[in-house]
Structure formats: C-alpha cells, structure tokens
Image (tube, rainbow, N blue to C red; front, side, top):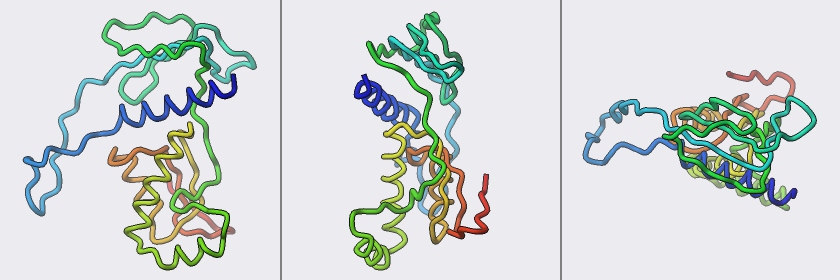
Length: 193
C-alpha cells in the first residue's frame, strides 16, 4: 500500500505540473526585444480525481471513495462520493489513497548534494549562475513530482531562489510554492512572502 500511495503522489504531481503549466506564447506573436503579450484568461479547467481512499488530515482516518474536484489551479471540493461534474476530466486512480501535498520547511532548491561534499563545493564554484538556474529548475520539478507542493527555501546565492520562485509563480516552470530567504544567513534569514 505504501508503494501505491507513493506512486499515486508521483503520478498526481506530474499530472498537475503538466496540466497547470502555462504554455509559452506562439513564436509568431513575439517581436524581437519585446516582452511576451499577456495571455487571454481561459476558462478554468475542471479535473476530478477519484480513489478508493482519501486522507484529508481532518481526522486520523482515511475516507472511502474519495473525490477531489479541481478548478483551474484551485481545489474546489473534497469529500466522499462527490458527484463528478459533466464537463470535468475524470481520473480514476483505482485502489489508491489521495493525500494532500507535502510541505518541506528546510530546502535548498537551488543546489543539490551528492555523496561528495568536496566535489559538490568545487563544482559549484566552477558553475556559472545561468547554468545553476537551469539545475535549480530541474530540482524544483523533481520536488513537485515527489509530492511536495510548498517548500521553504532557506537560502541560496545570487538571488536564484527569488528568480526560481517568481518563474514558478508566473507558470514559466513547474515547481512547488516557495517561501524564500534569499541569502543564506543562519541567524538572520528574512523570508520573503
């Protein structure tokens, strides 16, 4: 059952990241040197997730026949046996358990450690900021795919965490909601909401 729950979280995270990612404007509409035009707001898309169980955190028990109705990027309804709207895309997850997104309160999405701290340190010194930004976007996607929908990033350098948060908020890349500290300052980190 634990493997099925983990697999469901990964599948749901990947689905939501893809479903809510804003596509870039068509190349024909871009003028050299001009910012992209504002997209026309679309009607929010309805998605219904169904599963054998749903754990909503309101009690210590799972709810049978769980249903989650999502409108656009917002959860509209959660409960047992809710009617599925006719215009919703229904995803039946079968004998799975739906969980709320996880929150990680201590992350560094702009960097990732390996088994060799020394090697990581020197690789980081040689890596240009622009390249590190691309790595950070990948780390953000991996974090979302693992089921984490909110993170508190406790520091980076060159404001990469701020740029990453802004890119996620604007739908340019997939990733979790981020609360960021900017520079790593263990005693005096100020989180920007």
